[in-house]
Amino acid sequence: MVFEVFAVGAAFLFGIAVRQVGLPPLVGFLAAGFFINAVGPRFGMPPSTGPILDHLAHLGVLLLLFTVGLKLKLRQIGEPHVVGGALLHFVVSVVIFSPVARLLFTDDWTVALLVGIALAFSSTVLAAKMLETKRELGNFHGRTAIGILIVQDIIALVVLAVFSGEAPGPLALLIFATPLLRPILYRLLDYAGHDEVLVLTGMALSLVIGGYGFELIGLKGEIGALVMGLLLSNHPRATELSESLWSLKEVFLVGFFLSIGMSGLPDWEAIVFALVMGVLLPLKGLLFFALLVAFRLRARTAFLAALSLTAYSEFGLIVAAGIPAAEAFLVPLAIAVSVSFLIAAPVNRLAHPLFERYEERLQPFERRTRHPDEQPTELGDANVLIFGMGRTGSAAYDALVGEGKRPVGLDADTYKASAHAQEGRNVIFADAEDSNFWNGVNLEGIEAAVLAMDDIEAKLIAARTLRARGFEGPVVSHALYEDHVGLIKKAGADQTYLTMHEAGRSLADHALEAIEDGPSGRDGDRP
Image (tube, rainbow, N blue to C red; front, top):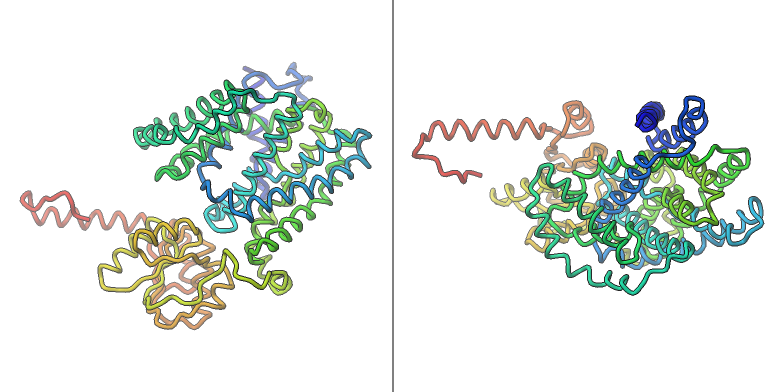
């Protein structure tokens, strides 16, 4: 137990240290693993991870795939630009990286092929974190990136099954019967409530039914966790379940990255390998951009998705750890992943400004055809714009309709926009951070704009651009934090309300009305 305490303490200190320079804590966890490997034996620590950290590492990977699966739609994975982009990128990447590994680092073509495969994948953890931080997991480019990552993870699991010599038996065919479990899984999630039972439900579905259950039928537990997440992705509470597990999953993943770092100290050859792969990293992003544009996505979507995918994958480390022939490259691959995180994390934070800077150079690569992520130019007879159709935007939409206004809702999540349209609301797919939308949209007839998005950058861009386009009507926004109020007003909003403060005032108004009405006025159904 002393070893585990020492390991967690080291992960905490290194994680805190790298956060101060704007890097993902996962880089610090890897560094902590290398540190423990270097100094641990001097203090009587074992040279490898103990059973507790090993279990934490495995649980972290399972929860990672489960939570990512919850954010997807099955039909999204089947879209041509997702499947085609992932498969073509994988093949071309292996063709590029395997000869480099063979030429510079090994004499064995099989080992070089496995190294090329490991480097062909992109980081699910980093991409999901970056997209979630920017509130872009539901945006078109965010869904595209996550969909490609899931296809890559499926490829990785197939590679593990083939090269590890563990071919699935006939019971593995039961995977095709898993859709029959959906009604039962939905019912379990309905019964779970909103407290710790919800967390336990997620753990049971991902670790027990998905992880252990799939191992019983001869498949990898990682496949099971992903399938369980996909089966529940259409449930109304899928997002709530994912959010309840997110922190728990990240804590467990600390064990995985510590175990990778403790697998061995980097020697000179490992450092050279990581530096070479760092130089080749931009090729990964350029290839993604070229493929996504070829599949008729606009330059902006292709650029943002490609940038999210430009990092080597922690899942590549899982592949290397699970195949004996590739174990010698586990430490060099871990260093290469760390280097890619060092490059990708700060660049992804500047994704939108970077595209604006190079937009004129990138747009000529777009195909001259209708794009699946096309932005609207006409808003019909609407007289109020609502940006962001989550709970706040939906409530504002319904209230405006009740007052006789003609609102149009805009949301960067194509599936959310489609769901609102099916319910009878005038909601269309549009991204407030997309310059193409602003360049083409006709704002004539719009009397007011409501900014109901959660992301502060999206609100600032929308407010500034509305004013830059000459819009003189009122711009009203909500704010999650008090320090955002001044920023939004400075960007051009006329009125900004703190969401929780307004909710409290509304409750107080209802309470005062109830007092005035007296006991006879209680109806319990006041909106």
